[in-house]
Length: 162
Image (cartoon, rainbow, N blue to C red; front, side, top):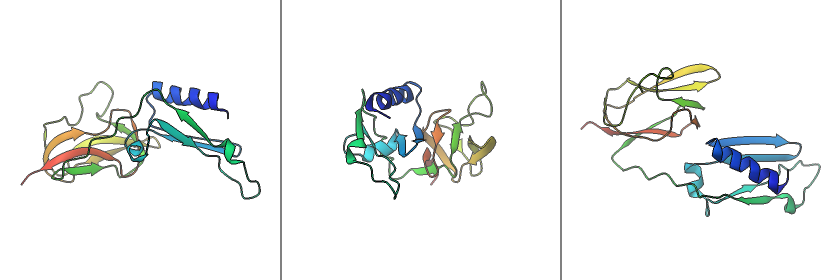
């Protein structure tokens, strides 16, 4: 995979708003993550691509490439200390409502109860309801509808009741 192909791939992922992508082609492995994870990188305008090295064949370091993106990813704001963060218990796709066209389960400003359904995470064609684990007020949704999410990813910020 050359630098031009890589740049086209990244532009396509940005255009389609894909947050995470992984590709293996022969001895080259490409893994691209966008979003909060990039905030920890020294310069979030670059993705580093490193070939997967087979123990039987060493690849030259020149096959490692950097591709510059047009716009830097904006780092996620730090949550306030007194907020409870609801995290994803599984990897999948985030859905804010039970079906397309339906109103979302919750919206910012809603009062939440323990056990109240916040969203659905689809994993392997199974719809998993994610419930609130603390009573309080929903302060912020941290992911967009239809976005792929990871295990442990922050989904909601809740101000717990006192």
